[in-house]
Length: 166
Image (cartoon, rainbow, N blue to C red; front, side):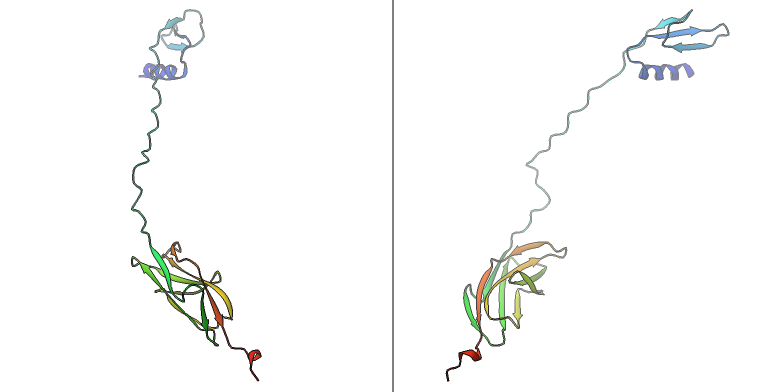
């Protein structure tokens, strides 16, 4: 058993060197890689080697997980470039989504999130006069934006005490 173990170690560590066997006077056997007095060369079988396997080719046509749905989110009111006359700065925004979606909707006014809700309908208050851009986004539970409406511009007019006709 010891001999097999030594041969296995030597086979793996010495690939092309010559191995010598020495039997001492007391009968012990020694294997060495140096020729000494009374050493006999041992022929070893060729080392067992194998080429590495080629990497697997990834098929690019395999479908990924399930495809993402494409949602169509639009703003219905106010119409693009509409003029709204409201002295209190109240603006009602309504949108529609197709197909129906689960998630929350965010209303952006001039690039800032103004409201979040379960439907694409919002009531804004205190909007200052002037030109404004609005957009609605559909957000999933992890915060990923699933759909965005195109930006709409509307104009809010408010009466002014400076425009009195006296």
